[in-house]
Length: 413
Ligand code: SF4
Ligand code: SF4
Image (cartoon, rainbow, N blue to C red; front, side, top):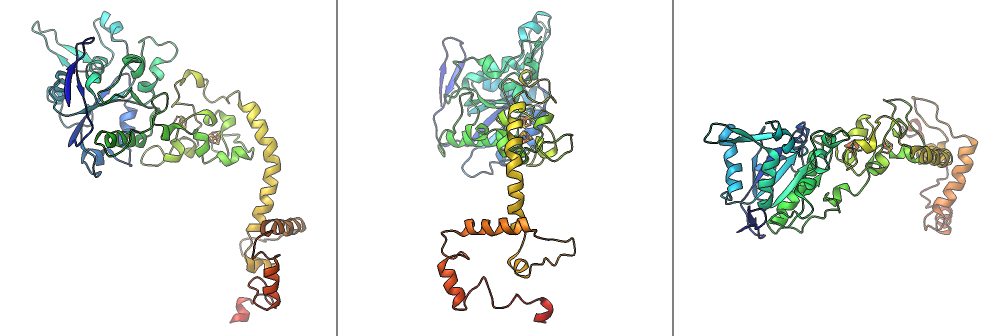
């Protein structure tokens, strides 16, 4: 660890080198936030916050978490570590986690107030002032091993930065600027979502720590600083309802089990892994529980996706295409499904001994099944139509066809 002073800002900067590290401090800051990102973080499972702070992952350093809600200390005692880090006296590497968007404190300052603050600045004249979290970010970012923006407000600006933004709120990357690099040489890392998937955050922290201690490569981030392996795919690709979309079957009302695109779901274009990973503790997640995707992980959120609950304009074309293709595919799949719902024994006996309902293969199913079988086994060595199989049948060793029908249970008894 080397300390240098930045000639432009005057702040001391710690330059980190990779190597053995026993503990890393994590300073949580909350700007214009609803605290939902904190809730999401504590719901993470792989790894959990608990595993990170107990150093339960082999090879990873212990995380000393400073969180305004989760820490057991309060007031000046809680703030002490923040001040130490700012003065360059912490003697351990640290990361900054920022939740919420960064408001323009100069606006509130002109009126003698503040938007989001933590800790007090004491002065001799007795005019003690709360310290805006934006100032903490400005002061702690240069020497941080990494700055991680948690949730959509911190990553892109989110709801506080939507149209009519009276606080001039902005994202962490807008606030720190294009040239910002952490002590590890990283631009801000962005974990979007309103609220984000907790595991996306803890997994990224673990991956960065592995890099920091020299146990792994630098994780892959995309051009917007998102962990590429988490945000490469659209939520639609992993959606439990994607098969309905493909077959052109759409929900008409909330509570229907089909694809929700005509009720306003933007999933086909939104980069998010919510449905495959689950919201909290791997449970829930928007479309898993009947909700549409309103694009909350995307930089354009919320304005680009409003009005919510109105189908996206692209749905008219893509929905029509899916309906047309689906109208051919669905009946074909039903035929194949009918064939595969019969066991070899039932086929031979031409009867399904089910007390639940009458199961019958009609003429169409039988004919299509015959040709399907031909196609399915053509060219394979042991297909029912192959020469080898016919030879086996002739020599009395067929395992597909016996001399008499399969015996019924009462005959066996
Ligand atoms: S509900 Fe949304 S994400 Fe899921 S299949 Fe339909 S359009 Fe895609
Ligand atoms: S599925 Fe859509 S609304 Fe749900 S978390 Fe992902 S981006 Fe946000």
